[in-house]
Amino acid sequence: MNRPTQGPFESPDPLDLALVQAIQDGLPLCPRPYAEIADHLQITEAEVIQRVQRLMERGDIRRLGVVVRHRELGYRANAMVVWDVPDDKVSELGRRLGALPCVNLCYRRPRRLPQWRYNLFCMIHGRSREEVLENLQRLIDEQQLGHIVHSVLFSTRRYKQRGAHYGKDSLPQARHCPATPQVRLLG
Image (cartoon, rainbow, N blue to C red):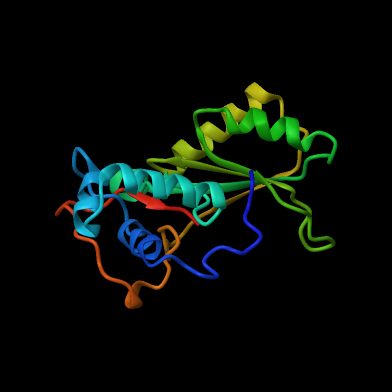
C-alpha cells in the first residue's frame, strides 16, 4: 500500500472529515447507504464511494466491518480462551482455530512473562456457558489440543462495543435511517 508522506488527517479535507463523521456511527440501514450519505453531504454516491476507498488506501480508515451485538441476538455467554502455544506452532494453530465456525475471533499476542504465559487468544460465543464449554471441548478434541495449556475467561459484563469515533462534536451530523446502524468503522 502506498501511503502519503504526510500522516493521515494532518491537513484534513473538510469533506473527508464530514464523510468520516457521517459513517462513524454506522452506515444507514437502507438499500443505498452511500447514496443516503451523499445526499446529506451534497455530493454524488460515486464520490462517497471513491472517497471511502481513498481513505482506506491511505490508511485513514483501516477497515469497515460489522459490530455484532451478540447479546441482543441471544448469545449470552462468551469466553476468551487463551492458549500457551509453542512459538513455532502458534501461527499455524491460529489459522486452524480462526477457521472454525465456533471461533469468532482469533489472534496472537506476545507473552508477558512471568505473569502471563499465553500467546494465542480465541473468542467463543454461545447461548449459554454450557454451550461455550461444549464447543471448546469439541474444538480441543477435534484439533487434538488436550496437551496445550489453556484458560477459559468468561465475560461477565459488556462495557463497550463500537467502532472508533473521531471529532464528533466539531463536524456536521449525517442523517441516518431510523433503524439502529449495524455497520461501523472499526478503528
